[in-house]
Length: 569
Ligand SMILES: C[S@@+](CC[C@H](N)C(=O)[O-])C[C@H]1O[C@@H](n2cnc3c(N)ncnc32)[C@H](O)[C@@H]1O
Image 1 (tube, protein in one colour):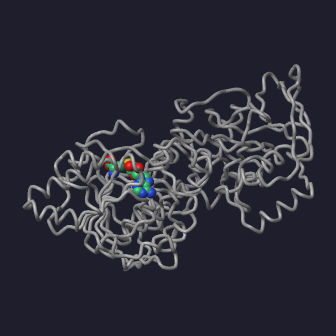
Image 2 (image 1 turned 180 degrees about the horizontal axis):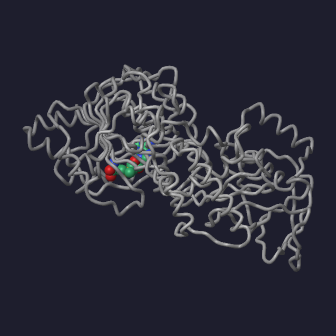
Image 3 (image 1 turned 90 degrees about the vertical axis):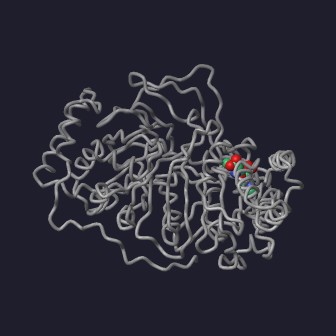
């Protein structure tokens, strides 16, 4: 979690998007509530879920029983004192008396039920999920994209960051779900509104695998609409049972775990039709994909080409820059530096030690540079052209990129490395990172790579023609349907998403050769100026070539092993 993320506006930092009362009430109407239920709302905001729960129970109990129930069975956390106060005002205005002691203004991540030793909440050696199973119902709308206190990030990562050997993303909603799962009694139910990224996004693969390993999982639509956030939401209902069910239910359809587990991202959007495409390996077996580099300030180094010329507004030079503690702290991860390094930095500062950096100044008039030029290299930025695009950008690359590398190394960020460096210059494929489908095109050798346009390169030993066969596949509707439906339905198409795409093993040899020949011909035409789009007849014709055919000997969708009884660590 970056320092920038920790300096966003407070509402975003808290992931504070309140649930409309009607939505919360509709959800509560569907959950089993009884006077014996022990209930937790781990981030209750102004009480959208608590009030309908409490009102349901108030009508089923005598006033004394109700008071006892509130004191003994109702638990909640809310980190924001203003939201907590607003909740308290409503609580009292509705005549429920004083706010129950177990509804606390606190951070859910440092909280444990009052019967537990709370210091264990952030102590990886003493946090023990088995001791926490206390709640029949955990309900709410946990913060999405919120920030975790810097000092808690590492201990929480040690507690929740890996389950069943799989990574759980350090994301507030993911950690809320994992911790709430720990707090559920066997047979207890968790009902959360959460981001629909849960369904396919690769970084949530570990969370999906965890939930389906020990819970009955149901995904349904959230009743009503949210005006407060653009994020698409879903309703996650899980019942803890300490074993896997044979399937999960997504929008009313049962998906066998066997089909989910055949997809590389454990997709909750797969179905029988889609699962068969994953029976013969992935593109990652043939190609390695990478994101390119994030310079940090493209306007400093990247120039648009017009008629073979660029305009250079800056003059660059290398210089020596003093090492200071202040500068190093400003760019350290979470603003933290170990004592040893701090000591070393103080010594360097006192000794006037310097490091190589770059400086630049604006020219009075921009310098016109004719391309090609030894100081510039073609730069692969995202574009919406398919099959091929002439170079549109160059990057200032004097001394083999030394100036850009120095800028990255000495800038105010803690990641000083350069993504995709070892693939710079290689021939491959590329596409736009943010797009509704793969705008795939051939990438000639020689380019420096930008992070907005991920790329893929043939693995060693893979036949050259695969480049064209895979380019053709990436342009088909089927490939894009699998990508956006099963692998990652968000607008980002990361390098790993490309690697996870199924390799079209079902395409027969003659159709494959035909596809390769067509792609080579289309590339040639595109290089001489012809433009293609997804509406072009030649591109639409590719769909036929890559259509599904039953293949003898293709692997059937199989679960890797029988349902397991899984422990939490
Ligand atoms: C999406 S809002 C939902 C609030 C409420 N559950 C509702 O449905 O209206 C998330 C809430 O989580 C709170 N929150 C964020 N981080 C928290 C944390 N670490 N512990 C407890 N509450 C937190 C925010 O202040 C916000 O009120």
